[in-house]
Image 1: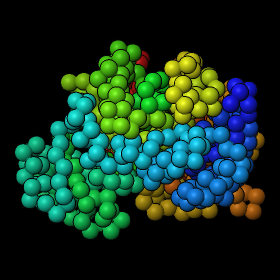
Image 2 (image 1 turned 180 degrees about the vertical axis):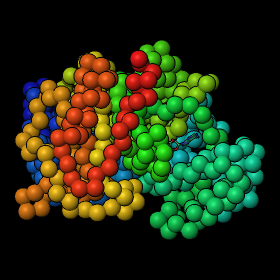
Image 3 (image 1 turned 90 degrees about the vertical axis):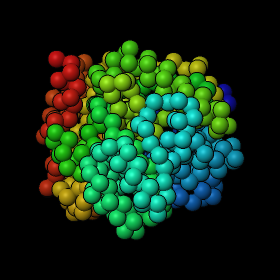
Image 4 (image 1 turned 30 degrees about the vertical axis):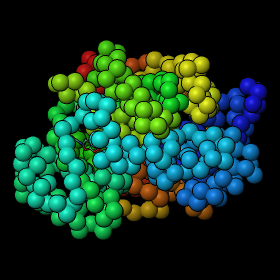
Length: 435
Ligand code: AMP
Ligand code: GLY
């Protein structure tokens, strides 16, 4: 395809992550029409709505052929774990995201841990069991010493990891895995692993199967409450770059974790393409992998996109045709902070349909210092209302982390909806380390 040809894109997803991807893709000189499904009102400022069902792979392929789609960008993990990328590749439609086999790095914790063991990638000590094997699980937990971490093997929508502080809690955790009908498949196998002490951070690696390019290190805030308290959520805020990952540490992470991961997937015959999200614990002994994900983090992506100066469409395309080594990815020096506004009750039950005020309806430019990325929103009688747990992502960016944080919270004060909740301490760990 000649370099200057316009490329139509199909963007799959409906969260803040996909809104940030749509905003950044829209800045590409090569973008033709960008379609999005299921999308959200913010995404539709940049993309044409498509009603194609991302779970129906035949329908996706037919849509792509009819609309001359030159790149499918898959935001969330489920379509990748279900093999959408494989079907698209068979139909010769370029796709940003890994094959079903490579997506097992996220889809199966048992697979990921065995992979790390085979390629000597640092991670917590572990063993894998059938859930029915309760006695063996309990005695291995005793052997490791509490706290221990019990993980459902499969995708579990954030409910699959339990940290247990005592033998009694381990028994209760196993009961929960057994009784939760939504977890039955995911929890039929259980990984039991050593509890790692340290600070968590996320590293995002673009890969075309062979070459890699690393984006800014980021830090998520997974718990609902300030000071990292309360239940886990999809993420209540993020910032980048995270100073816990110094340039020297990033070199070590590249050498000990990233390169062996990419080479390992080649050796296994399923080269990893797309973005590999490596969740890390920075322990006293060094960086260790907590988990792999086969997609961008949400809300980390909302922070990463404003740091990329280069053409995102060119970058994502390069991951699909083994040309990532020919692309120069220019990252700016901005610090970026994202604060998530959620509906009260999240991550449990919450109300929907509450009116949202203050969100501009026009497109946001490339250079804005406060950006709003929508997540659980919809239009009702021409009014933007809430339709999910995580509702808005307010992003600030500046030349220092403090400025980025101030701008993000200034953005928070410009928008409103009833019973919103958010954390006031996003990026505090980074600020304390830096100043
Ligand atoms: P995961 O889905 O594997 O990322 O686990 C969710 C969260 O549980 C992680 O972000 C960590 O905060 C925590 N976690 C998971 N595994 C461990 C571990 N081995 N040691 C300490 N914390 C862990
Ligand atoms: N922010 C955590 C995740 O995307 O899984």
